[in-house]
Length: 434
Image (cartoon, rainbow, N blue to C red):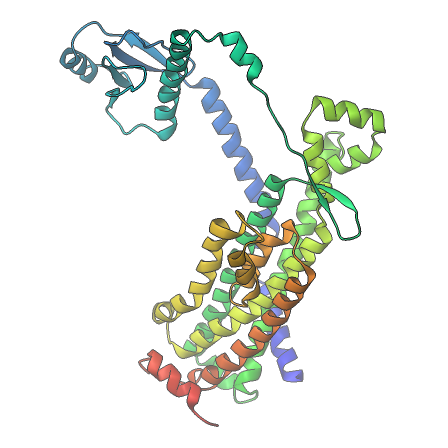
Protein backbone atom coordinates (compact mmCIF):
# COMPACT_ATOMS: atom_id res chain seq x y z
CA UNK A 1 0.00 0.00 0.00
CA UNK A 2 2.92 2.33 0.78
CA UNK A 3 4.33 1.80 -2.72
CA UNK A 4 0.97 2.65 -4.29
CA UNK A 5 0.88 5.84 -2.24
CA UNK A 6 4.37 6.79 -3.46
CA UNK A 7 3.27 6.33 -7.07
CA UNK A 8 0.13 8.39 -6.40
CA UNK A 9 2.32 11.20 -5.03
CA UNK A 10 4.64 10.97 -8.03
CA UNK A 11 1.80 11.13 -10.56
CA UNK A 12 0.00 13.90 -8.67
CA UNK A 13 3.03 16.16 -8.27
CA UNK A 14 4.25 15.46 -11.80
CA UNK A 15 0.93 16.68 -13.26
CA UNK A 16 0.21 19.53 -10.85
CA UNK A 17 3.63 21.13 -11.25
CA UNK A 18 3.32 21.36 -15.03
CA UNK A 19 2.50 24.72 -16.62
CA UNK A 20 -0.23 23.05 -18.67
CA UNK A 21 -2.09 22.14 -15.45
CA UNK A 22 -1.91 25.72 -14.18
CA UNK A 23 -3.10 27.07 -17.53
CA UNK A 24 -6.00 24.60 -17.76
CA UNK A 25 -7.01 25.07 -14.13
CA UNK A 26 -6.80 28.83 -13.78
CA UNK A 27 -7.28 30.23 -17.27
CA UNK A 28 -10.06 27.95 -18.56
CA UNK A 29 -12.68 29.35 -16.13
CA UNK A 30 -11.71 32.78 -17.44
CA UNK A 31 -11.27 31.94 -21.11
CA UNK A 32 -14.63 30.24 -21.73
CA UNK A 33 -16.80 33.03 -20.24
CA UNK A 34 -14.69 35.58 -22.11
CA UNK A 35 -15.13 33.74 -25.40
CA UNK A 36 -18.88 33.45 -24.84
CA UNK A 37 -19.11 37.14 -23.97
CA UNK A 38 -17.23 38.12 -27.15
CA UNK A 39 -19.38 35.85 -29.31
CA UNK A 40 -22.61 37.21 -27.80
CA UNK A 41 -21.39 40.80 -28.24
CA UNK A 42 -20.40 40.18 -31.87
CA UNK A 43 -23.75 38.49 -32.57
CA UNK A 44 -25.67 41.43 -31.06
CA UNK A 45 -23.63 43.97 -33.00
CA UNK A 46 -23.96 42.01 -36.21
CA UNK A 47 -27.72 41.81 -35.77
CA UNK A 48 -27.89 45.51 -34.90
CA UNK A 49 -25.84 46.64 -37.91
CA UNK A 50 -27.15 44.07 -40.38
CA UNK A 51 -28.75 45.37 -43.56
CA UNK A 52 -31.92 43.75 -44.81
CA UNK A 53 -31.60 41.49 -47.83
CA UNK A 54 -33.63 42.32 -50.94
CA UNK A 55 -35.98 39.67 -52.33
CA UNK A 56 -37.59 40.15 -55.73
CA UNK A 57 -41.04 38.63 -55.99
CA UNK A 58 -43.46 37.76 -58.76
CA UNK A 59 -47.00 37.44 -57.41
CA UNK A 60 -49.48 35.78 -59.76
CA UNK A 61 -51.87 34.98 -56.91
CA UNK A 62 -52.53 38.51 -55.61
CA UNK A 63 -52.44 36.96 -52.12
CA UNK A 64 -48.92 37.97 -51.10
CA UNK A 65 -48.60 40.67 -48.47
CA UNK A 66 -44.92 41.62 -47.96
CA UNK A 67 -43.59 41.84 -44.42
CA UNK A 68 -40.43 43.92 -44.15
CA UNK A 69 -39.44 42.72 -40.66
CA UNK A 70 -36.44 40.81 -42.07
CA UNK A 71 -36.42 41.18 -45.86
CA UNK A 72 -37.04 44.04 -48.26
CA UNK A 73 -39.47 42.71 -50.86
CA UNK A 74 -39.35 44.31 -54.29
CA UNK A 75 -42.04 43.48 -56.88
CA UNK A 76 -40.97 42.41 -60.36
CA UNK A 77 -43.33 42.97 -63.25
CA UNK A 78 -42.67 40.32 -65.83
CA UNK A 79 -42.56 36.60 -66.46
CA UNK A 80 -40.67 34.10 -64.31
CA UNK A 81 -37.94 33.69 -66.95
CA UNK A 82 -37.43 37.45 -67.16
CA UNK A 83 -37.31 37.53 -63.37
CA UNK A 84 -34.63 34.84 -63.28
CA UNK A 85 -32.45 36.75 -65.75
CA UNK A 86 -32.88 39.98 -63.78
CA UNK A 87 -32.06 38.17 -60.55
CA UNK A 88 -28.89 36.64 -61.98
CA UNK A 89 -27.60 40.11 -62.91
CA UNK A 90 -28.46 41.62 -59.53
CA UNK A 91 -26.98 41.30 -56.05
CA UNK A 92 -30.34 40.53 -54.47
CA UNK A 93 -30.78 37.71 -51.97
CA UNK A 94 -33.46 35.82 -53.84
CA UNK A 95 -36.37 35.66 -56.25
CA UNK A 96 -39.72 34.59 -54.79
CA UNK A 97 -42.22 33.14 -57.28
CA UNK A 98 -45.84 32.92 -56.16
CA UNK A 99 -48.15 31.16 -58.65
CA UNK A 100 -51.91 31.12 -58.48
CA UNK A 101 -53.10 28.76 -55.75
CA UNK A 102 -56.13 27.86 -53.69
CA UNK A 103 -56.21 29.12 -50.10
CA UNK A 104 -57.04 25.60 -48.95
CA UNK A 105 -53.97 24.17 -50.72
CA UNK A 106 -51.13 26.67 -51.29
CA UNK A 107 -48.66 24.93 -53.60
CA UNK A 108 -45.91 25.92 -56.02
CA UNK A 109 -44.38 28.79 -54.03
CA UNK A 110 -40.65 28.79 -54.86
CA UNK A 111 -37.64 30.78 -53.64
CA UNK A 112 -34.70 31.02 -56.07
CA UNK A 113 -31.34 31.88 -54.48
CA UNK A 114 -27.67 31.97 -55.45
CA UNK A 115 -26.62 30.40 -52.16
CA UNK A 116 -28.29 27.82 -49.93
CA UNK A 117 -30.52 29.81 -47.54
CA UNK A 118 -30.60 29.03 -43.84
CA UNK A 119 -33.60 27.23 -42.27
CA UNK A 120 -34.41 30.47 -40.43
CA UNK A 121 -34.71 32.41 -43.70
CA UNK A 122 -37.09 29.81 -45.15
CA UNK A 123 -39.10 29.72 -41.92
CA UNK A 124 -39.49 33.51 -41.88
CA UNK A 125 -40.87 33.54 -45.44
CA UNK A 126 -43.21 30.63 -44.69
CA UNK A 127 -44.58 32.44 -41.63
CA UNK A 128 -45.44 35.48 -43.81
CA UNK A 129 -47.60 33.29 -46.04
CA UNK A 130 -49.12 31.34 -43.16
CA UNK A 131 -50.15 34.49 -41.31
CA UNK A 132 -51.66 36.20 -44.36
CA UNK A 133 -53.44 33.08 -45.61
CA UNK A 134 -54.93 32.56 -42.16
CA UNK A 135 -56.29 36.12 -42.24
CA UNK A 136 -57.75 35.57 -45.72
CA UNK A 137 -59.44 32.36 -44.60
CA UNK A 138 -61.00 34.16 -41.64
CA UNK A 139 -62.39 36.77 -44.01
CA UNK A 140 -63.91 34.03 -46.20
CA UNK A 141 -65.49 32.41 -43.15
CA UNK A 142 -66.74 35.75 -41.80
CA UNK A 143 -64.73 35.33 -38.59
CA UNK A 144 -64.09 38.51 -36.63
CA UNK A 145 -60.37 38.96 -35.86
CA UNK A 146 -61.11 40.72 -32.58
CA UNK A 147 -63.15 37.70 -31.48
CA UNK A 148 -60.23 35.37 -32.21
CA UNK A 149 -57.86 37.64 -30.30
CA UNK A 150 -60.12 37.39 -27.25
CA UNK A 151 -60.06 33.60 -27.46
CA UNK A 152 -56.27 33.44 -27.22
CA UNK A 153 -55.14 32.61 -23.70
CA UNK A 154 -51.65 32.00 -22.37
CA UNK A 155 -51.47 29.27 -19.72
CA UNK A 156 -48.42 28.70 -17.51
CA UNK A 157 -48.57 25.51 -15.45
CA UNK A 158 -46.59 25.74 -12.22
CA UNK A 159 -45.04 22.48 -11.01
CA UNK A 160 -44.65 21.63 -7.33
CA UNK A 161 -42.96 18.49 -6.06
CA UNK A 162 -44.43 16.95 -2.90
CA UNK A 163 -41.93 14.88 -0.91
CA UNK A 164 -42.84 11.86 1.21
CA UNK A 165 -42.97 14.08 4.30
CA UNK A 166 -45.50 16.37 2.64
CA UNK A 167 -42.99 19.18 2.01
CA UNK A 168 -43.67 21.16 -1.15
CA UNK A 169 -40.95 22.50 -3.44
CA UNK A 170 -41.43 24.39 -6.67
CA UNK A 171 -39.69 22.98 -9.73
CA UNK A 172 -39.15 23.83 -13.36
CA UNK A 173 -38.56 21.10 -15.93
CA UNK A 174 -36.55 23.44 -18.16
CA UNK A 175 -34.13 24.29 -15.34
CA UNK A 176 -33.79 20.63 -14.37
CA UNK A 177 -33.26 19.77 -18.05
CA UNK A 178 -30.36 22.24 -18.15
CA UNK A 179 -28.85 20.88 -14.92
CA UNK A 180 -29.06 17.31 -16.20
CA UNK A 181 -27.62 18.14 -19.60
CA UNK A 182 -24.69 20.11 -18.12
CA UNK A 183 -23.94 17.36 -15.58
CA UNK A 184 -24.00 14.60 -18.21
CA UNK A 185 -21.82 16.47 -20.70
CA UNK A 186 -19.25 17.45 -18.05
CA UNK A 187 -19.09 13.86 -16.81
CA UNK A 188 -18.50 12.56 -20.34
CA UNK A 189 -15.74 15.11 -20.96
CA UNK A 190 -13.94 14.57 -17.66
CA UNK A 191 -13.94 10.76 -17.79
CA UNK A 192 -12.78 10.68 -21.39
CA UNK A 193 -10.08 13.35 -20.98
CA UNK A 194 -8.53 12.00 -17.78
CA UNK A 195 -8.90 8.38 -18.89
CA UNK A 196 -7.03 9.15 -22.09
CA UNK A 197 -4.29 10.81 -20.03
CA UNK A 198 -3.70 7.53 -18.16
CA UNK A 199 -3.33 5.63 -21.42
CA UNK A 200 -1.04 8.29 -22.91
CA UNK A 201 1.17 8.38 -19.80
CA UNK A 202 1.57 4.60 -19.73
CA UNK A 203 2.44 4.48 -23.44
CA UNK A 204 5.08 7.20 -23.00
CA UNK A 205 6.70 5.43 -20.04
CA UNK A 206 6.62 2.10 -21.88
CA UNK A 207 8.25 3.59 -24.98
CA UNK A 208 10.96 5.32 -22.92
CA UNK A 209 11.74 2.08 -21.00
CA UNK A 210 11.15 3.93 -17.70
CA UNK A 211 8.52 1.40 -16.71
CA UNK A 212 11.07 -1.42 -16.76
CA UNK A 213 13.00 0.35 -14.00
CA UNK A 214 9.85 1.05 -11.99
CA UNK A 215 8.49 -2.52 -12.09
CA UNK A 216 11.78 -3.76 -10.67
CA UNK A 217 10.75 -2.11 -7.39
CA UNK A 218 6.94 -2.39 -7.44
CA UNK A 219 4.43 -4.90 -8.72
CA UNK A 220 2.63 -4.05 -12.01
CA UNK A 221 -0.71 -3.91 -10.17
CA UNK A 222 0.67 -1.35 -7.70
CA UNK A 223 2.01 0.75 -10.58
CA UNK A 224 -1.33 0.68 -12.39
CA UNK A 225 -3.34 1.57 -9.29
CA UNK A 226 -0.93 4.35 -8.36
CA UNK A 227 -1.22 5.97 -11.79
CA UNK A 228 -5.02 5.70 -11.79
CA UNK A 229 -5.43 7.14 -8.29
CA UNK A 230 -2.82 9.84 -8.90
CA UNK A 231 -4.58 11.18 -11.98
CA UNK A 232 -7.95 10.88 -10.24
CA UNK A 233 -6.69 13.19 -7.49
CA UNK A 234 -5.46 15.65 -10.13
CA UNK A 235 -8.87 15.72 -11.82
CA UNK A 236 -10.68 16.09 -8.50
CA UNK A 237 -8.42 18.97 -7.45
CA UNK A 238 -8.93 20.70 -10.80
CA UNK A 239 -12.70 20.37 -10.57
CA UNK A 240 -12.81 21.78 -7.02
CA UNK A 241 -10.61 24.73 -8.04
CA UNK A 242 -12.97 25.46 -10.94
CA UNK A 243 -15.97 25.52 -8.59
CA UNK A 244 -14.22 27.92 -6.19
CA UNK A 245 -12.95 30.16 -9.00
CA UNK A 246 -16.28 30.41 -10.81
CA UNK A 247 -18.17 31.13 -7.57
CA UNK A 248 -15.62 33.71 -6.44
CA UNK A 249 -15.46 35.44 -9.82
CA UNK A 250 -19.26 35.63 -10.04
CA UNK A 251 -19.49 37.19 -6.59
CA UNK A 252 -16.60 39.58 -7.32
CA UNK A 253 -18.06 40.77 -10.63
CA UNK A 254 -21.49 41.34 -9.09
CA UNK A 255 -19.90 43.19 -6.18
CA UNK A 256 -17.87 45.34 -8.57
CA UNK A 257 -21.10 46.64 -10.06
CA UNK A 258 -22.71 47.03 -6.67
CA UNK A 259 -24.99 44.03 -7.12
CA UNK A 260 -25.70 40.91 -5.12
CA UNK A 261 -26.37 37.37 -6.22
CA UNK A 262 -30.01 36.62 -7.09
CA UNK A 263 -30.42 34.40 -4.04
CA UNK A 264 -29.12 37.14 -1.71
CA UNK A 265 -31.43 39.74 -3.25
CA UNK A 266 -34.41 37.40 -2.85
CA UNK A 267 -33.55 36.70 0.79
CA UNK A 268 -33.46 40.42 1.56
CA UNK A 269 -36.78 41.15 -0.13
CA UNK A 270 -39.85 41.53 2.05
CA UNK A 271 -42.96 39.55 1.04
CA UNK A 272 -44.60 42.59 -0.57
CA UNK A 273 -41.56 43.26 -2.75
CA UNK A 274 -41.40 39.62 -3.77
CA UNK A 275 -45.08 39.71 -4.73
CA UNK A 276 -44.54 42.79 -6.90
CA UNK A 277 -41.57 41.18 -8.59
CA UNK A 278 -43.52 37.99 -9.18
CA UNK A 279 -46.29 39.92 -10.89
CA UNK A 280 -43.96 42.02 -13.03
CA UNK A 281 -41.29 39.45 -13.90
CA UNK A 282 -41.28 35.72 -14.50
CA UNK A 283 -37.66 35.55 -13.41
CA UNK A 284 -38.56 35.21 -9.73
CA UNK A 285 -39.95 31.72 -10.34
CA UNK A 286 -36.81 30.79 -12.26
CA UNK A 287 -34.52 32.05 -9.46
CA UNK A 288 -36.67 30.37 -6.83
CA UNK A 289 -36.38 27.08 -8.72
CA UNK A 290 -32.61 27.40 -8.78
CA UNK A 291 -32.59 27.94 -5.02
CA UNK A 292 -34.81 24.88 -4.51
CA UNK A 293 -32.31 22.57 -6.26
CA UNK A 294 -30.20 20.73 -3.64
CA UNK A 295 -26.85 21.81 -5.03
CA UNK A 296 -24.85 20.11 -2.28
CA UNK A 297 -26.56 16.83 -3.17
CA UNK A 298 -26.00 17.38 -6.91
CA UNK A 299 -22.32 18.35 -6.57
CA UNK A 300 -21.50 15.56 -4.11
CA UNK A 301 -23.20 13.04 -6.43
CA UNK A 302 -21.17 14.44 -9.34
CA UNK A 303 -17.93 13.98 -7.37
CA UNK A 304 -18.81 10.37 -6.50
CA UNK A 305 -19.75 9.43 -10.06
CA UNK A 306 -16.74 11.25 -11.48
CA UNK A 307 -14.39 9.33 -9.18
CA UNK A 308 -16.21 6.03 -9.70
CA UNK A 309 -16.56 6.43 -13.45
CA UNK A 310 -13.00 7.61 -13.83
CA UNK A 311 -11.60 4.69 -11.81
CA UNK A 312 -13.72 2.21 -13.79
CA UNK A 313 -12.72 3.52 -17.21
CA UNK A 314 -9.22 4.48 -16.07
CA UNK A 315 -8.41 0.82 -15.42
CA UNK A 316 -9.53 -0.10 -18.93
CA UNK A 317 -7.53 2.74 -20.49
CA UNK A 318 -4.51 1.61 -18.46
CA UNK A 319 -4.86 -1.92 -19.84
CA UNK A 320 -4.94 -0.57 -23.40
CA UNK A 321 -1.90 1.65 -22.76
CA UNK A 322 0.11 -1.28 -21.40
CA UNK A 323 -0.69 -3.47 -24.41
CA UNK A 324 0.42 -1.14 -27.23
CA UNK A 325 3.61 0.68 -28.16
CA UNK A 326 2.11 3.83 -29.72
CA UNK A 327 -1.10 5.92 -29.59
CA UNK A 328 -1.92 4.87 -33.17
CA UNK A 329 -2.10 1.19 -32.14
CA UNK A 330 -4.37 2.09 -29.23
CA UNK A 331 -7.20 3.36 -31.44
CA UNK A 332 -8.58 -0.09 -32.30
CA UNK A 333 -8.80 -1.02 -28.60
CA UNK A 334 -10.25 2.29 -27.46
CA UNK A 335 -13.41 1.96 -29.52
CA UNK A 336 -14.97 -0.93 -27.52
CA UNK A 337 -14.22 1.01 -24.31
CA UNK A 338 -15.90 4.18 -25.56
CA UNK A 339 -19.05 2.40 -26.84
CA UNK A 340 -20.79 2.39 -23.41
CA UNK A 341 -19.82 6.05 -22.96
CA UNK A 342 -21.31 6.92 -26.34
CA UNK A 343 -24.48 4.94 -25.56
CA UNK A 344 -24.97 6.84 -22.30
CA UNK A 345 -24.11 10.18 -23.97
CA UNK A 346 -26.62 9.77 -26.79
CA UNK A 347 -29.09 8.20 -24.35
CA UNK A 348 -28.81 11.38 -22.29
CA UNK A 349 -30.58 13.32 -25.05
CA UNK A 350 -32.73 10.51 -26.45
CA UNK A 351 -34.18 9.01 -23.26
CA UNK A 352 -32.94 10.50 -20.00
CA UNK A 353 -33.70 14.20 -20.42
CA UNK A 354 -36.98 13.44 -22.19
CA UNK A 355 -38.18 10.85 -19.67
CA UNK A 356 -35.86 10.75 -16.63
CA UNK A 357 -38.02 8.19 -14.81
CA UNK A 358 -38.56 5.85 -17.77
CA UNK A 359 -37.39 2.24 -17.85
CA UNK A 360 -34.48 2.86 -20.22
CA UNK A 361 -33.32 5.89 -18.23
CA UNK A 362 -33.41 3.94 -14.98
CA UNK A 363 -31.40 1.03 -16.35
CA UNK A 364 -28.83 3.31 -17.98
CA UNK A 365 -28.32 5.01 -14.61
CA UNK A 366 -27.84 1.67 -12.82
CA UNK A 367 -25.52 -0.25 -15.18
CA UNK A 368 -21.95 0.67 -14.07
CA UNK A 369 -20.56 1.37 -17.56
CA UNK A 370 -23.29 3.93 -18.30
CA UNK A 371 -24.35 5.13 -14.84
CA UNK A 372 -21.87 8.06 -14.39
CA UNK A 373 -23.28 10.01 -17.33
CA UNK A 374 -26.87 8.75 -17.12
CA UNK A 375 -27.28 9.35 -13.39
CA UNK A 376 -26.05 12.94 -13.69
CA UNK A 377 -28.75 13.49 -16.30
CA UNK A 378 -31.40 12.22 -13.85
CA UNK A 379 -30.08 13.57 -10.55
CA UNK A 380 -31.73 17.00 -10.82
CA UNK A 381 -35.17 15.47 -11.41
CA UNK A 382 -34.98 13.47 -8.20
CA UNK A 383 -33.88 9.84 -8.00
CA UNK A 384 -35.35 7.31 -5.51
CA UNK A 385 -32.89 6.46 -2.75
CA UNK A 386 -32.85 2.76 -3.58
CA UNK A 387 -31.95 3.42 -7.20
CA UNK A 388 -29.14 5.79 -6.20
CA UNK A 389 -27.78 3.33 -3.62
CA UNK A 390 -27.94 0.41 -6.08
CA UNK A 391 -26.26 2.47 -8.79
CA UNK A 392 -23.42 3.52 -6.47
CA UNK A 393 -22.94 -0.02 -5.17
CA UNK A 394 -22.78 -1.48 -8.69
CA UNK A 395 -20.40 1.28 -9.81
CA UNK A 396 -18.03 0.42 -6.95
CA UNK A 397 -18.32 -3.27 -7.86
CA UNK A 398 -17.76 -2.44 -11.52
CA UNK A 399 -14.54 -0.62 -10.64
CA UNK A 400 -13.26 -3.65 -8.72
CA UNK A 401 -14.14 -5.96 -11.63
CA UNK A 402 -12.55 -3.77 -14.34
CA UNK A 403 -9.46 -3.26 -12.18
CA UNK A 404 -9.04 -7.02 -11.78
CA UNK A 405 -9.59 -7.52 -15.51
CA UNK A 406 -7.20 -4.72 -16.49
CA UNK A 407 -4.53 -5.83 -14.00
CA UNK A 408 -4.28 -9.27 -15.61
CA UNK A 409 -3.57 -7.67 -18.99
CA UNK A 410 -1.38 -4.91 -17.53
CA UNK A 411 1.01 -7.27 -15.70
CA UNK A 412 1.99 -8.92 -19.01
CA UNK A 413 1.53 -6.13 -21.54
CA UNK A 414 3.58 -3.50 -19.68
CA UNK A 415 6.81 -5.47 -20.35
CA UNK A 416 5.99 -6.50 -23.93
CA UNK A 417 7.61 -4.62 -26.81
CA UNK A 418 7.26 -5.10 -30.54
CA UNK A 419 4.42 -7.60 -30.18
CA UNK A 420 1.59 -7.39 -32.70
CA UNK A 421 -1.35 -7.07 -30.36
CA UNK A 422 -4.83 -8.36 -31.20
CA UNK A 423 -7.87 -9.32 -29.19
CA UNK A 424 -6.74 -12.96 -29.16
CA UNK A 425 -3.37 -11.87 -27.74
CA UNK A 426 -5.11 -9.85 -25.02
CA UNK A 427 -7.23 -12.89 -24.18
CA UNK A 428 -4.06 -15.00 -23.94
CA UNK A 429 -2.45 -12.48 -21.58
CA UNK A 430 -5.62 -12.39 -19.48
CA UNK A 431 -5.69 -16.18 -19.09
CA UNK A 432 -1.96 -16.46 -18.43
CA UNK A 433 -1.13 -17.65 -14.91
CA UNK A 434 1.49 -16.18 -12.60
